[in-house]
Length: 259
Image 1 (cartoon, rainbow, N blue to C red):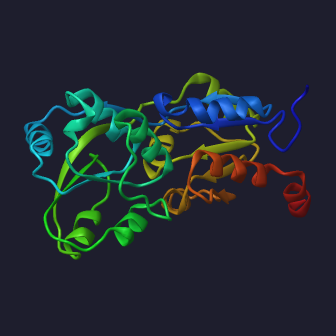
Image 2: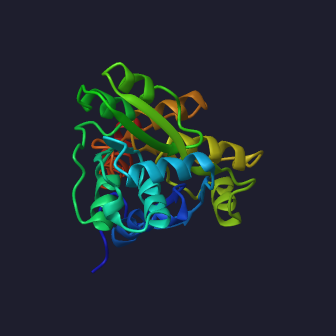
């Protein structure tokens, strides 16, 4: 059966890292879209004495909580710990994707999952208390979470769980399609993918005014700060929510309304 709907026959650029984009690409493919992979960041593991000490303390039960802000952090735990039982702490996950990754690995659900899948939402949902909290985050993640936890009585320890690498260029397929006006939408799933896209795009022109669709408000703000017009923001801030936002941005009704 030929796919029908707002995404059928559309060309969509996915800027998410390759290792995290499989589900989004699969959904878009099933709905008849042509997907161009243009990862604008790469995630690399960190090897540091600070992370080693933090993981040793985690396995020893010296942290009351660990905060997980992306599936990449779960991958780090899988690579660095001997077993899931070494996470001897309550677990707070920023969103459904991170929670699902942790559950698949540890065979238990996180203790805390906020209703709003942002760092601010996680900080608001975090309980008051005393003790130590491990915040294993990206090297370029913004400050603020640790201070918010400290305001609730916790002693927050931040360590870099992985490094974010910005590629120098985008794949030729992506730059060619963007310059030719063949792209209908560009998806961004983090503020860093927006920054990486802008850096890697360089002087390549974008023709045809593709729709810009973001996974959440922080990503959308970064896109607007970069001079982009954001056409849709996912709600909830998940892969499924991103697909719905794409459908909304590319629906014939929306095109007619702006025509």
